[in-house]
Length: 476
Image 1 (cartoon, rainbow, N blue to C red):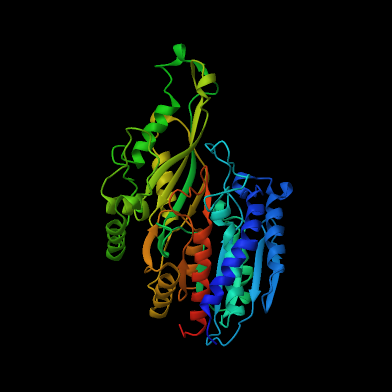
Image 2 (cartoon, rainbow, N blue to C red; image 1 turned 135 degrees about the vertical axis):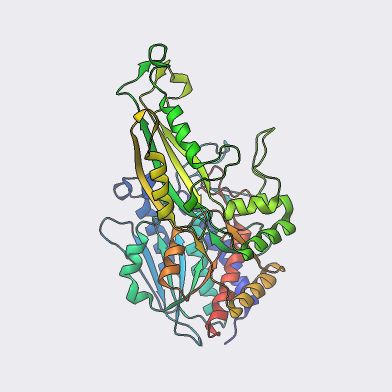
């Protein structure tokens, strides 16, 4: 059996035009915040609404050999599990795992006046709103690709689609779910994940690495209550000054270089070459034109170095603070404490647990003035580096890119994290990975005005169909 790709392309286009976009509009309107941002997620029911929405759509698809259920484990978010029997004439007994998530980041501020996180708007081929691109479209695109293979003379191996609900919280629930599914998963030799990004919308971009993540709350206390700054200032040290000094222990304020030994790794020569290739191809456009305010600059004008900073070097961001009143309500008071939430992106091959341990020790040892330092809500997740592509897969991806986009596939490293990939890499060390996605220029995942580029999502669905068909006829 041979996939009639032209017919499959037409079917996929019709699905996006007549059905998928409407379903995604409905999904975007659901404020299914990830558990870290909605501790009462179970009682509030928004994640359950998203699960029901996606599950009901899946159950309505005409896919041969498909079963759908929701796996529920005590105290954990639910997991949609879709099993699809092998179809056509596959030459492999292995399993293809497809992955996506339905939980979302919080609203954030700064949305355009006529847009909002839960108010879906389609404009210029983009679906604006939270979660469509990250990563609600994945379930719809994955199943549509499988359906297109079945209806147009193609073949696919046994497939298992997992749609989780805790990814934006670091996927804390997923390992338990995967362990519970061990027998049902079987021998996974190909993983397809649509939760990553692209550098442009005119070709296929394959993610070759993902950074890991370390999160902590750092609290410094000094007095039991706020004191008049005229009386206490100069006698009692400011907690902000203390925490500022602690940050200087872990980051060079001039360059942004992280000073933790465990957070720095040797960058593989091949990944340096990839970054240089992307820089040569795209120039400054590879930096996605950050919306800098007038007069501001980026850390370096060397595009290759900037890409390596983003993908293979650690970086620190202070993403939240407590103990600081808004300026409109700030009296002349020496505050009793300061808490900062630190986010460290660590290189793909760094040991995130070791980074967390070194970070904790560095921030809590020999603190000035004997001020108590509390490390709260510590989290760590390793990054991931893709195994070398087997020849059949490299050929299948490049052929798909040339057919769908008219351009060869491109490789690049991603600066974000998908904790699931590191876990899967350990569980299935011989598996091949296709990590890609729609988070391209200005799509602004996690931020205001997030959008899904609808045409690119449609084209990516076509790529997925071709890869599934090629995998079925290749002894990987």
